[in-house]
View 1: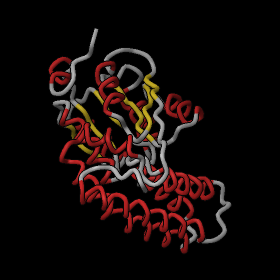
View 2: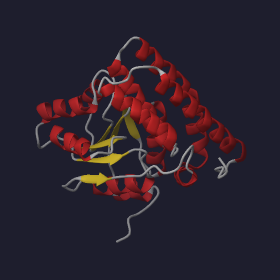
View 3: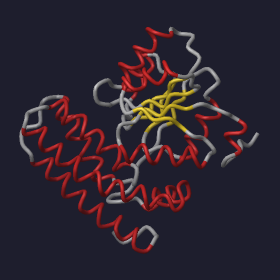
Length: 263
């Protein structure tokens, strides 16, 4: 049977949703997608806020980012398991830029019910919302093709978000230079945990636009920080340079409203 689309899906599958996400651009994309499907979601920026929100009111679904400050998604899920047990009345689905089987295993071991990968696609989100009340794992990998900005991904975003895509692009262009600055500051402080967290956040938000080069560079810094093998600031400068290319393409998109195949 064909699933309902647009606001009809919320009528067919009414859900109270909590979005756990600390990245402002990712928040905006997820909220806009949910709104186009007829849902309104509350937002928590870290695991502590998730626990507080769940104590205040009931939810049916928590879309849980993995890497968040103060308390990450895995620790929050473990705390939820301790407080509510295995028969909690809501589902937890990880939404993460991690793409390895080991990451799915970690999520399931912590007590999550499934995992979807970022950047989130509208079809994937619709599938999760329609299946969230059913048992079993939701594991739907997504791909991020392209180089600077992937035109297919931009077309998908345009179809999903409409005119609100401009607002998402503007947020990305405003927030990313600040995150890159914070990344470099964390490296100078030798705070590798913070370097890993910020690189992961940059990887996730650049993946929204299919910015494969920037995403791959961020993934490299993330893994190097995790393994304590990052030795100099050159990879950070490469991320900065890649962002300039992505920014140029997105500015062209903002100017004429269409993806630019030539860049």
